[in-house]
Image (cartoon, rainbow, N blue to C red; front, top):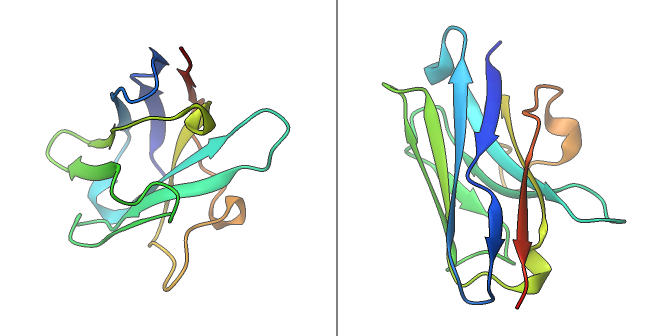
Length: 126
């Protein structure tokens, strides 16, 4: 399986943007779907977005639709989550994770995989 490492988190004011990267090492990155999750203090980890192994299929949680985009570069073993119009409720630790494929008809849940990165903190405040 691939090893994953997130970067790009930080502090931003409401309405601002951040770009998170998920870099992978190991073999066969292009075989895996990549999901982004987040976990706010005191809350359950939740699925934010998922991209298929080829990048041809993407999905987003309702609470980020229209604000977040996801893309992947299999030649460079990376996935990017672009987050626009960030709000305070987007404050969380963001993780990327890998599995065989994105779930059909639903967002991935934490039970989707046991292969996670270490997370990157996103803080949105004025």
